[in-house]
Length: 181
Ligand SMILES: [Zn+2]
Image 1 (cartoon, helix red, strand yellow):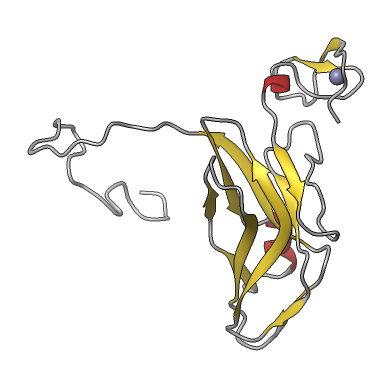
Image 2: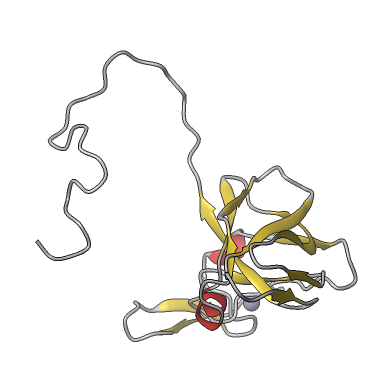
């Protein structure tokens, strides 16, 4: 995927975006060559993920297992992949919008975090929320998406007082409900 000698060329990949420089050969965006995600296949059925478009934030993650989720049933989808993401980043596993659209109220995927130092298999817990239909998962199904994001680590401190703000302790609903005020 990553070529040995990049040749950067300015491209506008979407009208609402600024110009970016892309490599003429491998199509990666300039700057991204310093960030590598390493995947290791643990299973012959595993699929190495890829970004489907130049602007895609996430890459699809594929199942290496077939099973049927009963109504209200839970299960774990295996991916046959171990991963090494750049230091200072996390890998988040999220629902694919395509799946939610095709199967509304069917399977739900809890947001999961893969730590930078985790080297085990990526596994995805799923639940069938549909009240009448079973849900079938097959080998090779695109079941979730992965997104790599920068993280910050902090010094954790216990204090007696926090700084004051206008909002203060106002929590849920303090800026109004779903309708226009
Ligand atoms: Zn290149």
